[in-house]
Image (cartoon, rainbow, N blue to C red; front, side):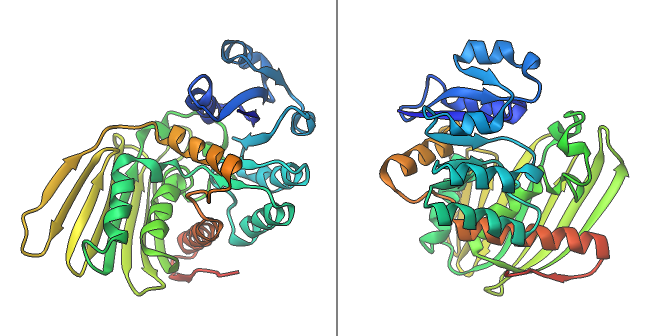
Length: 325
């Protein structure tokens, strides 16, 4: 069993703990760090871990064998470097960073220390998305020509305060909270993105924002894609891939439809899983066995570069080439 510390116990930090504690055969939280300990004492007591306000003390605790960061991205680089220097595996929630250059520094710190590194792109572990990846990778629909993606989540309009309402922490409206998952799906399915042309429409600023982020992308392969995220409408997830021999569409967490040329489309519903728990367990396996983590560091950097270009394009109103450095 890997004894771990979680840094940050807001909504998502608690989700990380809930997905592991008493459920995982590999991971167990023994420490938690929060800037507002009085607000989470009952949670820590119920989950059976120690609570403090000191990040470095938790990282340097010899009992702690891995560290999970559920903190704002502006803290990620320094925190990742500190954990890596302590020789401990580190999990980081997205966004890793707002620029490829900053993301590359974080990856370099873990590479130099030789410690496992993970990023919490849990939407990859939806049952529908795992099957979509298999269908695309196996060539069932031929060569990828175009992808459409939408992650709309009205929940982000009800998370008051914090990083989501801070433009410096969460630029591009809903792109930082939700749209990043679509970009990750695009890179996972079709490879690096070369160019983006993005726009942001704000109907109402925070708190309780109403905005739409959208982008047209071109992949290094030549394929194209369109994505959108709307902070208003009920939760909606859709990734659809068009190929030279058919199309495949993932809807929500469990539904996948596949159509091949000259064949009747088929729709299957797969058992629901705890996507965050699946990814966390994969990281535990990486730590224990050395098996590669499902999200490669090259994908992490490609997503960060694409996101950086999206924000630049929204600001300039022009097409932007994605940085590769």
